[in-house]
Every structure is written in structure tokens, then in C-alpha cells.
Amino acid sequence: MTIDYNPMNDVLFKFIFGKEERKYITIDFINAMLNRSEENEITDIEFKNVEMLPLEAEGKLTRLDVFCILNSGEKLDLEIQVANQQNMGRRTLYYWAQMYLFSLKRGEDYGQLIPTITINLLNYNFLPQENPHAMYGVYNILNKHKLTNDLELHFYEIPKFKKKPVSEMTRAEKWLAYFAKKLTKEEASDMGEAAITSAFEAVNNFMLSEEQRLAYINREMSIMDYNTNMRISREEGLEKGMKKGIEKGIEKGIEKGILTSLRRMMRTLKLSPESAMDALEITGDDRKKYFKELKCTQGSGHDETKGCAFKK
Image 1 (cartoon, helix red, strand yellow):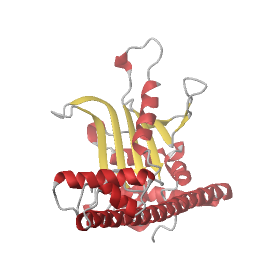
Image 2 (cartoon, helix red, strand yellow):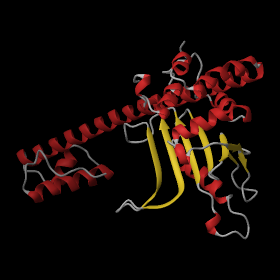
Image 3 (cartoon, rainbow, N blue to C red):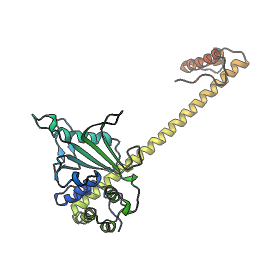
Image 4 (cartoon, helix red, strand yellow):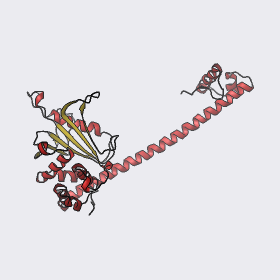
């Protein structure tokens, strides 16, 4: 059975991955996406308030999708982003900074800062690479030395996931297949992925609530409205750009034609630039512009039909 809902809907995502009663799903997901196993495997998490108040009254309120503390002590933010608002790099860095900043209490030293991680699931192409996963940290750009383990920014671009046999998938790829709607509940169950199977089953509980279904539908409509507005804006921008380009091309063509006529008159009738422009009744700023071009042609001794480059 294929998925007939949007697993990237953030209302549904928070219901499945942000609830205490289903935190085993979240733990499995985190271990898969961070490639944690054996000695560094996450065994427990504590969900925290997703709203982080600003330090000043005028500051920006930070609202995370899913915020939790790992049993290792690390802080982690799970973010789902469906629409490309052209700010994901700075946005995730800002979220990371807020979590990292508030890990230090008054009087504590910098050695007590807590390593902080963000995992960003993106439903659009964002980074200049084919691999759907990228991890950013703080490195020396020359020798690649990692300055600190306190910063990890993970990006998973769902559209870049390519379907492969389930038996060949890594743990992270199985979750990517789930979010890309390229995995069925039966496949997840057959390969023994209990957490992913539970994620499928959690959707049924979610849809039982009329209030939750309405929130899900409203979110889907907002995404569609945003995408429609962006498409219309791009089309209008392209149309205006094409119109402006055509107008500019026509203008350039007219200028080139006038220059060619002036040069022919100067050459065949032995006229000065001033006399040639008088004959074509060229005045004002246009006269200064053409005069500069014609003088350039005269002084250079090159082919008059080519002249100098126009500068406006």
C-alpha cells in the first residue's frame, strides 16, 4: 500500500516524532540520521519546550519543530521544511545558536557549553551536490582540521533520494524512502523496521481526530498557496524580464542603426560628426552619446562599422 498522505507535513511530523508516547520512533530516526550505533547510540531523549524566548523584549521568538535532549547530553533540533524560502542556511544556524547560547547558565564557564545538533529535512533541492545528505561543522579550510564537535548541521534533501532495493538501503535511506513516499508499510514490516512501521500506524491515530485532520489540511493548503504564489511571481518576473530584454534589444538595434548611418554619411559625404548629427536632427543627451562614439571611431582608425562599445 502506497502512502496517500504527505509525511513532510509539519503538523503530522510533530505528532509522530514529537510525542513522549512515540519517542522510540524519534530515537530510531535520530540514530539513523546521525549514523549512531553501538557505543554512541542514542538510547533515550527528553522532549523540551519548542519555544525559546528572546533575551530582549524586541528579540525574535524561536519556535522549533521538535526539540529534545539526548541521553548523551547533546541538544538536538529536528526541522521539516517543505517550501524553499531562500533562508535555510542562516535559519538553521540561528536555531543552533539559540540552543547553544541557552545551554550556558550565569556563572558557568565555556567548558560547560553543550554540543548542539540540527537535522533538517528539506522537500526541495538546496545544496550543490547529488548526495541527499550533507553535514556541516567548523573546519579549517586549508587542512580540514575540525575546531570543535559542538556544532553539527545536517541537511537531508528528500528529492535527491533515489529508490533502490530495500535490502541495499542504509538505515538513513530507509527513513528517506519513507519521507519520499517510496516505501510501503508492508516493506517496512518485512525488513523488520519496527519504528518506521509504527510511524505508518501513527498516521491512522492522527487521522482519527477531526481537529488534527483539519490542522493537517490547513497546512497543506498553506503550502499549496505559497507554492502557487511563488510560481505566479516567477512567471510574472520572467514575463517582465523578457519584455524588458526585448525593449532593450530594440533600443540597442536602433542605436546601432543610427551609428551606422552617421558613419556612412561621414565617410561618403566627408561630414564631421557634428554635421552628420545635424543632418539626422540628433539633439540633447543622444547627441553627446553618439558624438563620443563617433570620435572614438575616428581616433582609433578601425572599421567604422564596428566602432566603440556603448556605455550608458
